[in-house]
Length: 179
Image 1: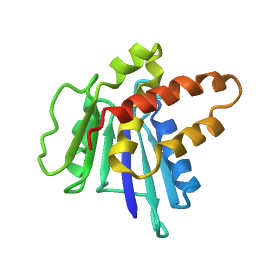
Image 2: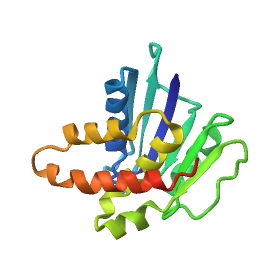
Image 3: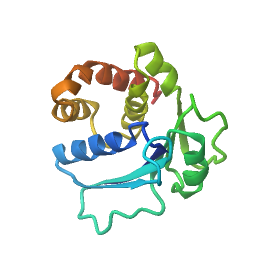
Image 4: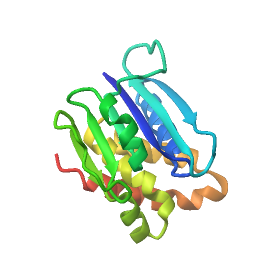
C-alpha cells in the first residue's frame, strides 16, 4: 500500500492538523508514515500545504511531485496541484470555496461543501474535518475510527471540548461519499 496526498489551502484552515491526524492514524494502523509541512510567507491567509505519505514499505523521501491524491481547500490550491495528481488518482475539493470544476476526467473527484456543513454544525473551523472525513472514506487509506482515536489523543486540555464536534464533522464528510 502506498498513499501520497497533498493537502493544500490557506493558512488557518487546519491543513497541518489534517495531515498530522492522517499520519498518526497511519502509524496507529502499523504503516510507515511521513508528514512534511510547507508554509507560505504569511501564517494566516497565506498559502500552506502538507504532504502525507502512508506506506507499507519504507519511505525513501517525504517529497512528492505526483501525488495519488490532492485535497484542495481553496481555488488557488486546486489550480496549483490539479495537474500533478496521478492518473486514476483522487481530488477532494472544498466546493464551498472552489466554484470551478476539476478539468480532468482521468481522476475521481469528490466535491464537499465543507464550509456550509461546518457552519450548520456551528463552527467554521471544523470544515477541515468535513473534508478529511470524505477523503478517508473515499480513499480507504485509514479507518475513520482510527482518526477518532487520534483526535482524542491530539485534542487535549482546553481543546478537548472540541472532540465531539470534530467527530461529527468527520462523520458528515464521510456520509457524503457514495461508493
